[in-house]
Length: 270
Length: 333
Ligand SMILES: Nc1ncnc2c1ncn2[C@@H]1O[C@H](COP(=O)(O)OP(=O)(O)OP(=O)(O)O)[C@@H](O)[C@H]1O
Ligand SMILES: [Mg+2]
Image 1 (cartoon, rainbow over the protein chains, first blue to last red):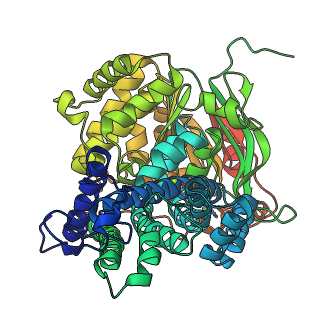
Image 2 (cartoon, helix red, strand yellow):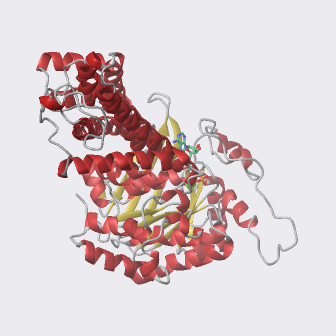
Image 3 (cartoon, rainbow over the protein chains, first blue to last red):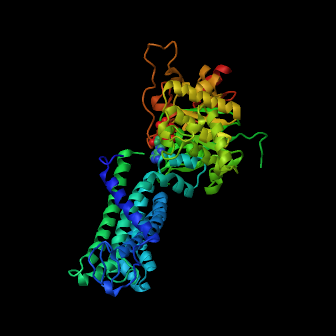
């Protein structure tokens, strides 16, 4: 697969690769302690010692962006995992069984979809109280219907295929057929959805944290870094720019990756 | 309860399969009788749409949605299958009864390797470990004619030719050494030389493992070559059943006669083949009398009155044509 034939995939992989590198590096090493305040070095503009400058408490912005990557990835990963697996289970069962089960499950998903996602998350966080864990739960819940729809489509498409009949003819049960025979065939739209979902989770986390109901201080989050730095946007623009670029890169990267995978599955066949 | 001295492996009696509303059923299969002894090969022949596939699916308990068993029984090893649900039937599938489909290109999972697909029934129905199952799969692959099994174990269906795919299907079907294999037009999708090889393979499997085979085909020539007995189906029922030699020597039902006359033979070379005029009645358009009557050259008025019964016309030879059966009886007397 050359860069010419699938530029989205290549660019997406590159960006996601770099971010993943930063994410992993964040566990091992950051230039400074991300929460270490040093009031003698407030609002330092970018320099060799502080490549992204320092903020109003004299904290190193690069270190905070790196730890923010960790938060974003953690939230994105777990959200997609929760939303994806619940959505897969519901959608697969609905699509494979059809009939009343399908009807009931999909109407429930419609009802959830009709509720604006971010509002749903807001309600959950307001009821349960703020915190990273609850944020992840709320976002995961918000993603269930879209994953369920995609999974249902795939399972519906494959359940009447002859190879499924053939698998049934040697005694495979429904769970085995869904997991071992249909899922691998129907996986690519799910993978694409996961990638795009990851990007959406990053945005949602940033939004909720920006509103102050997501990740709680002092843990750095890109969204909260944005909201905290807007007060001195003109005095120290680097404090806003760094997390903004990080968010944009992550969203772009995962969306490109999703597009790239879609194009690759379409063009390359099996 | 009576227990016959030797119950047949498969006994289908009076089986009717219908689509449509319960009060106005459309019969796709009507009053079907089939019986198959252990280790026997029974050929089932009939035109497209006469209900061969549905009958096969009924035996293995996989009727399509909307199709139901209206009447009749399906007994396998003395056990009634027609009411069996869920786990009971699933335990038999693959282990005691297996099916080979017409189109190996679509009946194999495109994203699973050949080896993985042969191993699966073994893992499901036997206590084998993965390692043992793999070894068994390799030996089955050798048995069905794969050369270089170690390499082919890991290939995907689309990397194989049609004939090889059908061999893979056969390998899956025989993996657990079932007593009965239902082969639904196993060679229709293949070209003539490959067709002969696959049929030869089926005969070898029957001989070496003693597995009974229900060989479904629309080609009397295919079936005649390898089956001891043949059942001829028309519009959902068996119209004639006899040993292969008897059937070819002395066909009774006009439909069977037509089928035999329309086969290419040495004598007919270069001449146009005979074909039975008309077409199989569509579902819901079957005449109320003998379904073959509109196409029959020797019909009599009574044929239009009711569904004909199957009558014995010789030892082990039955035909669903009372007028013809009557003629024989008069000749015999
Ligand atoms: N899923 C279905 N829904 C409605 N009608 C069906 C369905 N499957 C089969 N039929 C009808 O039932 C009849 C018997 O079909 P069946 O597939 O058993 O025929 P066949 O003898 O196997 O034919 P072929 O040689 O084409 O495979 C046909 O008239 C067909 O139109
Ligand atoms: Mg058929």
